[in-house]
Length: 243
Image 1 (cartoon, rainbow, N blue to C red):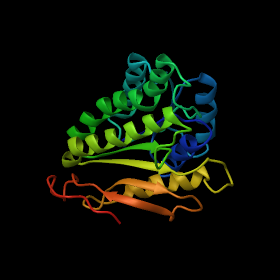
Image 2 (image 1 turned 90 degrees about the vertical axis):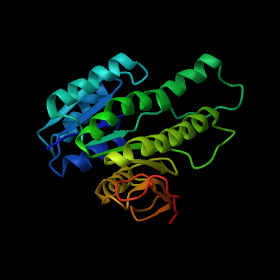
Image 3 (image 1 turned 120 degrees about the horizontal axis):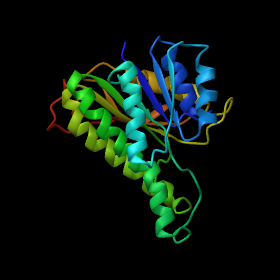
Image 4 (image 1 turned 135 degrees about the vertical axis):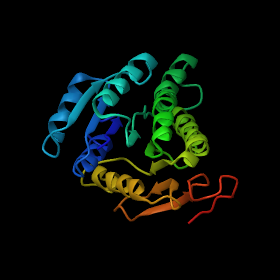
């Protein structure tokens, strides 16, 4: 079975998503910036799967990220699932960050996602299937969170582009916007977020959702869905619809 790669596998959403796919018998590769984080996640996942690969890389380092993705693919083949969950979440107003600091947040929130998509998208398209998803964290631009707003709306644009490019070849591309602070046992429990990812993955061609806003409180509470205009059973030149 082709594997799942989860990038940004801290103790919240990343770990829960990895566990959700591991429970279905899928080989899972997890990636984070520090060896300690990766080892903790891999140890936790081995209760659900014996086929777990831990990878360490800075997503802002293109060469290191590509090498890690090569290692995952070398073990399990081209991924069937790839979830990009890495991000820099901070509060900052206009002018708080230098240009270099702003670019550093962009490198993680968007740059790493571009590198990941450029690696996985063509491989998924070549095999005629795949699920490539990204964790969003903001519904509308916020002047109190400039870097996050710019990054997450850049990510939304990237998802739209990837859907157009790879959707007709059988790749489901999705953006899941999580509308609050993630906390186990709270309104935005990461296990519930993981369940939403699983439901997106299970959508059949022709019904693919490109974007969902998760309002918290249970996997059924999603709004603002946008159906892909590029999935194999939907004309690529057609209009989108909302539900």
